[in-house]
Image 1 (tube, rainbow, N blue to C red):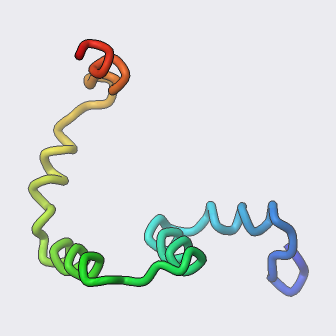
Image 2 (cartoon, one colour; image 1 turned 180 degrees about the vertical axis):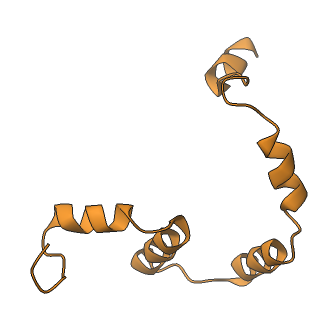
Amino acid sequence: MALDGRVSTVQEIKTAIARLPLEERALLVAELCGWTNDAWDRRMQADAAAGKFNSLNEESSAYEPGRTKPLDDILEQS
C-alpha cells in the first residue's frame, strides 16, 4: 500500500476488497456493476430488517457441517 494509504496495484485493491465486510463488498459490486436498489431489493431489505427471515436463518443453522449431501450426489440419483 502506498504511504498515503491509497491502494495502487490490482493486487492491493483485491486485498483491500477481501478485507471488507460482506455487506460492504456487496455494495461495492452493485456499484461497479451499475446495479441499483430496485423495488425487489428494497422489499428484501425491509423484510430482513423486520426479522421475516429469522426463522429461515434459525432453521438453516440446525444443519451441521458434513451432515448434508453434496448437490452433485443428489442430482446423480435423479
